[in-house]
Image 1: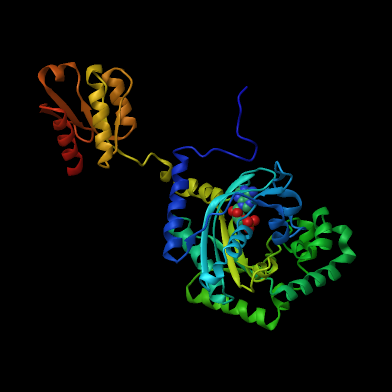
Image 2: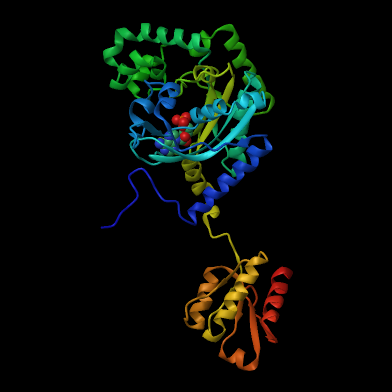
Length: 426
Ligand code: AMP
């Protein structure tokens, strides 16, 4: 019986993994440049961390969490997102007392029991940032600017940044009530999901993709027209800062995000190279979450990209990233068993000096061994067969040129020194 990876999960093998490495490496570099420090939290947490922060009536908590009882009967959940764990860590370690402003980034797997399709997995990966400690609209704009710049750096050009504001908690609640009042008379005409949303999470009705629901949504008042004066000003400032940095965006009045903790600015970044699951990432402000989790009043904002989806777009736009980019400096053929052990020592010594060396372990024909060297993209090949040993020589073939250099062999060190010299000279 063969055992395969579970539905909605998958392996990331070379050379596809080179794209993942590239994305993660560029994220670390750019986020570091913007002053963010990496935070790593556990993959599982107490279930109530997520139910309290994300919200009981959200899709994630009501139907997508991987929740189980551990051996002592405690309810544990595989993290479906990272904001709540970061806030937990922030409070647990009282990081607010170390510095008034904390900027974190994270990279890692998340888990949601969703119906798998292209761009939607049950174990997926996110990279994201969180800024804790300020309500300044500059940080909303910085988060968006960083997300936008990151995409440009990795070569995903022309993303669309959609932005909206849900206002403070009070505005959010009032707007939810307004939607309920307006749509309740037509409740039975909405899709099944929206009928439930209207009762439990009315704002979510706004981003329903169902064409018949859209008919009713388009006549609803706009979120941004119903904000408190302070929220209106906050949003206006975010847009001003984005304009000053030349970050393109579109205001999307129907944008609401699936998690309860968002307040004020919310945003999503989509890309036309993705299909129906077109969101590369999203985020927003969450000014009440820290306090709701019994911490001090703390303004906060963050975003997350789905790495799976970034990679899907890069596979189309930059397929060269998934080629074997690693060139081998030298490949030592295995033509004469009596010198194999000496070559084992040689390859180890070369590697210790930072040279990318490898050795053929199979006793195949010279032609087959050269084929292997070509496949590994070797720059030099070391040839030491019966004939060379009898003549007390060895050959180094430069694979980029036709020539083969014959060098006399005095002791084990000659081979190492000469090879090193040739490799470094190139
Ligand atoms: P969210 O945490 O729901 O705001 O999602 C942020 C980003 O994570 C989305 O824009 C997607 O790129 C990615 N994402 C969310 N859920 C999944 C999933 N099930 N599979 C793959 N990527 C996902």
